[in-house]
Image (cartoon, rainbow, N blue to C red; front, side, top):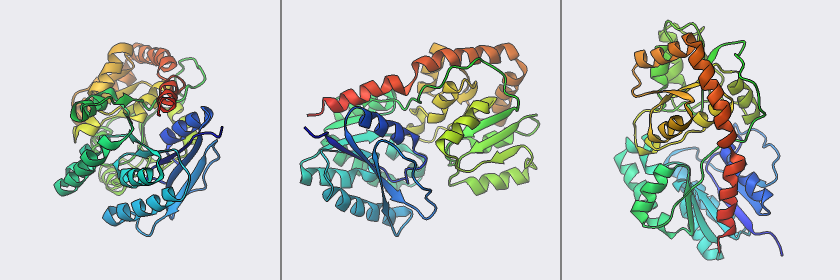
Amino acid sequence: MPARRITLTVTNDLTYDQRMQRICTSLAGAGYDVTLVGRNRNDSKPLDRFPFKQVRLNCLFDKGKLFYLEYNLRLFFYLLFHKADIICSIDLDTIIAGYYAAMLKGAKPVYDAHEYFPEVPEVIRRPRVQKVWQWIERTYVPKMKLIYTTTQSISDVFAKVYKREIHTIRNLPLAQIETSPTKPATRYILYQGALNEGRGLEHLIEAMSGLDIELWLAGDGDITEKLKTQVRALSLESKVRFTGYVKPDELKKITAGAYIGVNLLEMKGLSYYYSLANKFLDYIQAAVPQVCIGFPEYRKINDEYNIALLVENLEKDTIKSAIQRLIADQNLYAKLKENCLVCRRELTWEREQIKLTALYDQLN
C-alpha cells in the first residue's frame, strides 16, 4: 500500500523555517510521503536536502494584498494538479487555497496555527485588515478535519470559540548533545528571530548603554533599518552587531556561544501574549540563561524549571537591571544554567513529535 501523501503549505521561502523542517522530517520518518510548499523570492538561497520534497512557487508580488491573492491562486492550482491525501495549511495565509483544493480533490484539510493570526501586531494596528483575517478564520477554521496549534493557551481560546477539540503541538527544538555548564569565552547577549515590531528590540538597545557586553541580533525584518538608525543615534555601533539571517546550523552555534538570551515580547495582541517563542526554547536547549517577558506560557515553564529571569515590563532600566544581575551574580547564573540542562532533556522535539504523528495516524 503506498504511503499517504501530505502536502503542507507556507508563505515563506522554506530556507530558515526550522519548525517546518522538523515537522516534515518527523512525518516523513513516520512513513508519510511529504511535500512542503513555499514561495521563491529574488534572494532565496538554495534549499538544503531533507527526507521530504520541497517546492517553491514563483510570484510577481512580494507582499501586501496582491501577494496573498496571487500566492493563494498559484497555490490552489498547484495543489489541484498534484496528488495529496492530506493538505495542511500553516496559518491563515494559505488556508483558503488549501481548503478548496482539499474539497475538490477529496483530501482532508488540516490547520496548523503557528500563531494567533488575527492578533499579531502587524494585523491589530490595521482594523480593516484584522476584520478580513477574523472573517477568514471564522469561515475556514471550523471546516478543518484536524486543528492544532503551538501553545495550550491558544488551544484553549480556539476550543472555546469553535466548541471542538484543539490539539497542542509545541515547537520544541531537537535535543542537543549534553555538555557541561561552562562559561563562554566571549560574552554577548543574543536575540534570535525576526526584527519586527513588538519584539522589545528598541527597549533592549536602549538598555545597552552602560553595559559592558555586546548584543547580537541574529535575524532580519521590517524594522532592521530603524534599529540600525537607533544604534547610530546612541553611539552603540561597537556594542550592537546585526548578523542578518543565518541558516539553522550556524544559528545553533551562535546560540550555544551566547552568555545571555533575550525574549522581550511586547503586549501587542494575544498572539504574542499567548506565545511560546522558538528563541525561548532554543536558549534552554543551548543551556543559555535568559531574560524573558513574564507572559503565561513562559511563566508556566519557568515556575517548573527556573531557567530564566522574568520581567514584567520592558522599561530600559528593568531590562538593564536583569542583565546586570545575570552578569554580576555568578551563583544565580550557574544555577539557571544547570536548570537548563535538566529542562532541555524533557522539552525536546523527539518527545513532541510522537504526539504529532499520532494525530495524523488517527486522521480518517
